[in-house]
Length: 466
Picture 1 (cartoon, rainbow, N blue to C red):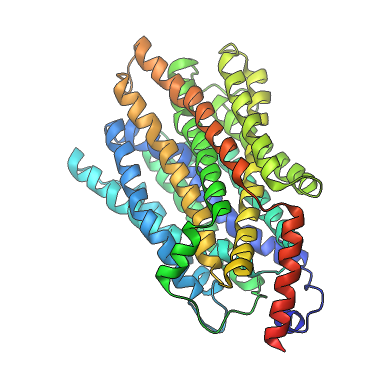
Picture 2 (tube, one colour):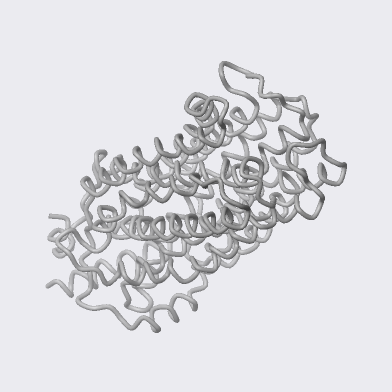
């Protein structure tokens, strides 16, 4: 139905609430996965398994070098997929089960020697990220073909980011509590079992997304050459600008998440006592970020009607950097002022993520308009790589910083080690946000340009169908 209406050149088919919810659930799966990794992966391998911080940091960077190949490859494969379910939706069906399985394996390290345990980390984390690519590149590309209307895609993106933020709330509020409940005194076992619960929920979410969504933009009869598509992408300035801003924006958040448990234990001297209800300080910190992210998502859905996306991303980056620095200068025992400031970090992050993912699909339309190439999967693969690269860099930074400043797990830390924790938790995250703000100054697809692109593409597609 959606395809026939588009072919006739009529108004784009509106996206119903059921489909928006269904699409958003796909990012609940992804968000639970990456938020859990972001908070507990580095801590699990360094503080519980006992591997060297720099070794885990290096592992995370090396696996991203692999992703630099697999992410665009998956985009190219998805763009060229033809099935009764479309180009992108089938991959949600195929990847749902392995998506969760390899996530569990990451936290199921056998009691072997350090070298063998590090090898296990390399293999399982690489496989987990490969399956993440298999699912999330097509998932992101699906947003680009769910409607030819930027306004409709923006609305769907807001729901997507709402569920992404909800995943952060769930990890923040329930993460440490579930680990204690499922693992008892064995924290490592609790982490693995909690990941198993996440895997089951993610499987359900991905199947729901597959079942409730549609692809409304008719694919071209054939795609261009792989080399030509990649060359076009690398010459697309707006894509480069958003990719830089997204990578650095996620890096800042991931570095704070990865070092948060170290900050509260070794710098703030937190003993795990609940602050409110069953929430201890780390849980309150993570929950504030996620609640702020939800607020940012809601705010962004209104602001984008009046302001260009690039300006909103720049403002969000400055808000995040300022709030992170303010958190750093507050007294260590100022729990509620810190929570309020962390909420502001989340607001900035929520605005950034809504705008960035909406902009990637706008760029896919821009490429189609300018180069007459349908390469949504390849364009959107940048968003997946940006998130994964940002998470990896954010997790790797504490590893290298803590190693260089003399951190030793489970002992009283030296002043240099405490400085290293503060660098990873606050100063480096604030600093890396600023180049992303500068990069967005080179994004040239404003609202008037996008309206012109939509109108011309609609006319072109109508003529091709007629």
